[in-house]
Length: 121
Image 1 (cartoon, helix red, strand yellow):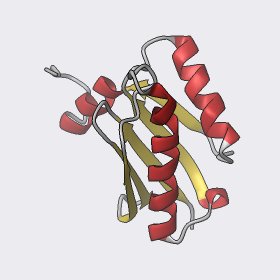
Image 2: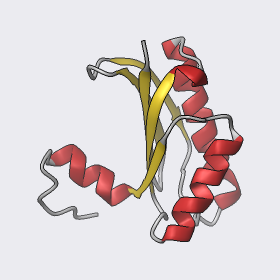
Image 3: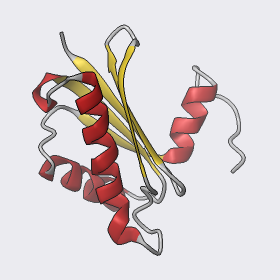
Image 4: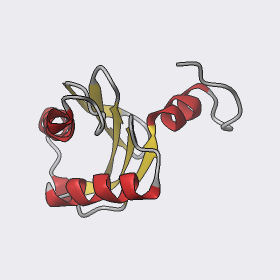
């Protein structure tokens, strides 16, 4: 069975979830802020890595079992931000297809399946 990974790396915390393809959540992890431009940005991506590892561990899922991942990240605004985050994610052993978005996109999609609406942050 293959699984999917979802990560919300925000300004205050990072949450990672591992789910089966049917949407059943099987693992969760939490870490500190994930914003790459936070004043403590040196901690941002390690916090993301910690949350992802904890989610995988609680799910009992190996990286190789992931069919894909989505990273909804604060501070990810430009193509070079997306490429930078993807490079870091790849360096932590995720070989599955991934997508990186700004965290407002994740909030919008979570609140409105058709993607229409407004996010006030």
